[in-house]
Length: 136
Image (cartoon, rainbow, N blue to C red; front, top):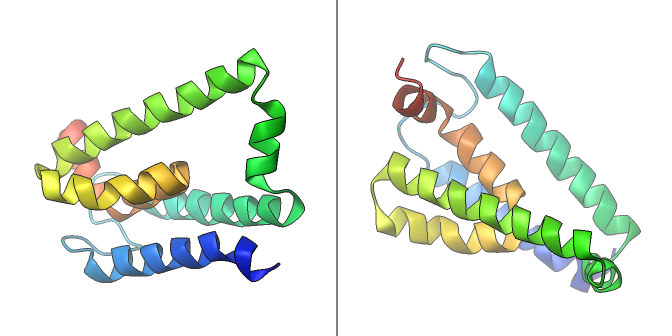
């Protein structure tokens, strides 16, 4: 992989490291809440998704692929669906954190990395999300 193609991954892994270092409030990989198996399961999903995304990036350039499929109506609909879901996730982050500053810090990674970033947020904040939205 060339440096140009590796740059987004370097940026992503730097973001992951920063998010993990500055994360406060609950253990990284173990849940102390009502549904403790959910957190390790989310981490497995996250690592699997990161691995598959990395593999895809070694096979095809994402921008060339988007350019090739963009003329298709379903491709545009899938893109809209993705970003509507990301907007919803940003709202959930705001509800969970209660801070526009925290939301702003997650905004750029979510726009750049989409569900790679949202899965990281959910894995990091699993206990607080379960407690807030399920009420246990």
